[in-house]
Image (tube, rainbow over all chains, first blue to last red; front, side, top):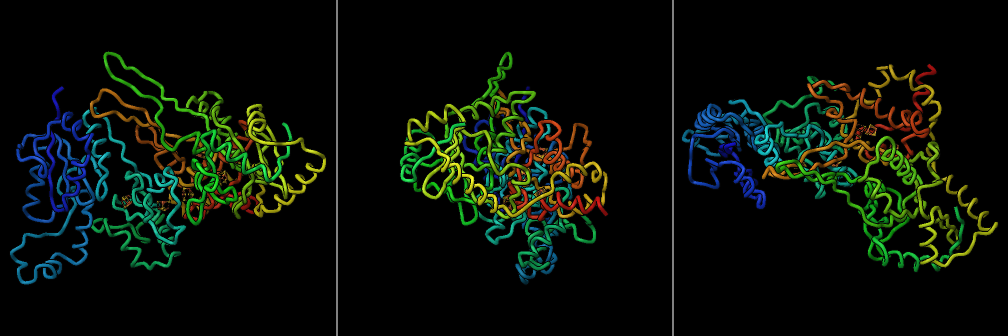
Length: 252
Length: 343
Ligand code: SF4
Ligand code: SF4
Ligand code: SF4
Ligand code: SF4
Ligand code: SF4
């Protein structure tokens, strides 16, 4: 069996996802020997357009980016979106809440015309994505699991249940008991409840589960004195590119 | 059962001896709202006057949230080795309803199939019970679980100036012989003990009409309106199952090393309240909505095992009520069935 050729690509984001892969330490060597890495922006200088699997981090926010992502989409057989920016647009989407024009003015003033910037979108708005390694930063063990599953030819197991499940497996005291709030009941698990483990609320960096009980979450946050605006902020921090289900369009 | 009495001033030395001779797990304060059962190295860490624990102590020690079941190597053939961990430990300070919850798991994991991973840990666990303070959500007397008749090696009950001791096993008796100075219980001691039990029972404020629920469950089972109302705010988050002392469902995952030569099979706590639980190969989900799932959970807790083992799998500990952010309350729901079927 020849080793699958893998490319790791970066778009708009902080580059932290690629660092997560480099942080694998012990497993990194195993990973490198299990696949053939032909492109890795942050780690190697060689470059080849011959790859089967593309791990893509970052969201698409420039015209140039649109061309690049389409090219990757044409070459790779399997696309894995790595990290919140690639998966759902991530924090970058907050720009869209202002509108590209207004945001450009605010940031670049009269130099705004020099800059190539378009509405931020997750990569699956341009190409078909096969698997999502969610999170900001993503869980590096999940990235390994996806790659390993691709090598052995089975479907990676990516949870579609709330963070509360992992939080309870970890025996945490719920942060609501300390008067804090948490998006855990509607957020997608897979991070091993990273934030509640260290005593802070979840902010849904892995996105929400497929069928979140939005109304219940609104009622819950309201019991803790949050307004609808605060609540939308809670939903939007990492998910502003997605239309969040509202009371009207999602009646649970 | 042997009944003994220990003077109060002997207690400290008894505990110290156990701590220094065994791996000793007991309740300690975790944060402002809960206690947790953890290894105790010094008697000052032990706080038996607890009210709430998030995860039931016996489940935590016998059925790990995630656990390696087997280890395999892929060579010319596949070499599979079971991973069975177990060492002698003392579980100290577990209360009656959590002992009853453990007794349920003991029966479950030895019926139809012997679960080696569970039972080898259980055999090596010495259980020393003690009453704790019930929360407002505790309805264990209604479930017949506020008193432990078996499952412990020793049960200590603190009376005014002495401890009343019930010894349930030969192993418990050996420990008492070895580390504590005790005398036989007299008629006077039994009188004090009975009086204590009457007072203790008064501390439980919540009652449920479980008999009525059981009798009417089939009537309410197909009432969609009822279940929709009850499950309306459910997040399908599974917390109610994961914190339950008797929930035993698990999922098995494969964890193969990247070298593709070796790996493990891992089991982790699962929950019937999350949608994936009902998902079968081919993508069909036989419990697609939260109403179905809540109904199934109540059936499992409050009916199935009466029919199978002659006991409820709910011990009334109240943990699922406290943990549920949607305020879904099994005790209220049990009682509301009566109203629902009588109108
Ligand atoms: S802290 Fe958050 S994730 Fe954990 S149980 Fe509470 S709501 Fe769920
Ligand atoms: S707990 Fe929530 S915010 Fe934190 S890493 Fe997990 S999904 Fe992201
Ligand atoms: S009943 Fe409550 S704890 Fe259980 S799954 Fe529903 S919301 Fe979660
Ligand atoms: S169903 Fe709820 S009250 Fe009953 S034993 Fe489980 S957690 Fe306790
Ligand atoms: S089926 Fe549900 S209620 Fe029954 S033991 Fe499993 S998780 Fe608990």
